[in-house]
Length: 620
Image (cartoon, rainbow, N blue to C red; front, top):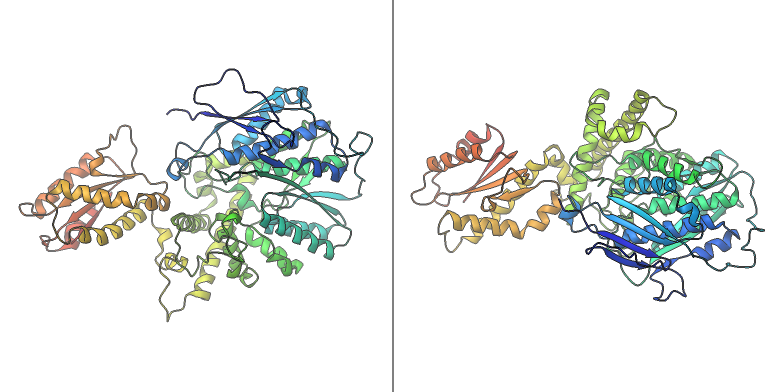
């Protein structure tokens, strides 16, 4: 497979490398107002420094590099949906950056551990850093010198504060259980996020006077829209900001509140390759970031994760015990706030929104997390986005598995994922670590099943039709119990049952090749929807004539046209031959029988389907 071209970002006015491959893509990134080409990113470093009076050169470099990595991540496209789900996910990124502390950033140990952390958290192929000498910025004020530092606060803890439910619950728990003051560190990128973080910080300050110290760091693209919105490198930016604040206040740890299910984020399917499941606060990511940040000074640095073995429903219950429901509806857990319309604060269809709504129902707190917060109510409304439908089915399917798997079966099925966790959860032996993770996942699975039952109890009115295409329908039809290929087959049959009779209403197919061509045209017209709804199932029609030695297919579609001279027995012979000829997991036989030559559809289909590995769809 051909490697993707390297994408190179020239930062702080760094010069273009002399030797580049012909297909390399080069983009300049600069936030300085006096740069020759004009700034194309916003990085609020001067304002941030003024808040702490002074930061060492090495920390200033860190904040700039983290900001440039975040901006470059958003500018480097991962490709179209079908590419994103397969080979084109991983990018090769190179940052050429002018820095102040050249000797530090030239160290191989610094570059190696940072590259490892970023590659693991993003799933990208490579991150390369090339430092250049000669960078400097003017002091931000009279006090921006080594002689001054921010006033030290006793019993201060530095907390990553995104404005989401987990970070809010974590901050509240620290405020209630300790006497510590909190430095709440936020990254600001969108107006909605700014509003959320500001209102929550003000509310916390009013509840806990003189104990809240909010600090924010602005970092956004300027004059262009992002090509990639997964924002996987945001964790690096957030921890860098928090580390800078911890350095200013003389702390050697920060707090990151994220529930364990989100942090581990096990793939919803075993074929979700290339780290498509985000690893922003995964134990390995956190461990690598701790190692990297510890290189900045003479002492170790720790990222505390008190919610590592909590579920999202546990977070709701924490808020219930603290009786701070007035703040809950103001928190925003959505990863796609840029899609929200009207007064809704959540899109309602991203993985975070799905998890939050199920957790609210699992904990019985749905009244405090009402549908009005969400632009899309997937529970009772038609789900128009096939990706949202896929996420819902996969979410419930995984939860069902977790709820029913024994410890040994969990260990067997999740061996590869567990290997990236066991060595990075300190203080536990392997089997103890596996058991705690299994217990966490099992608890999550039971909670999702409980939430599903509660949703049906609350919203499934037996005297009304179930809204078509809603979560209620998915649950009623048990779609999550079917294998992905079986669900795709059912969807294709549904499409063809409607489209084929319409296509031949005025004139029948000339012959079988003509029928095949029409079937392929119908499915090609539905390809975007089908690929979005079933992104991990590869399928092809008979006209494609795939080379099965080089192309892997999960589903193969073979058409049969029963016309004059083609008897059901002749079609049966061809289907039997196809089952022998095509070595694929599943074959869908589309049989067009306008003259009703097949007398007993059930008997005809069951003769093949009973043998497995195929489905027969008879159309008239």
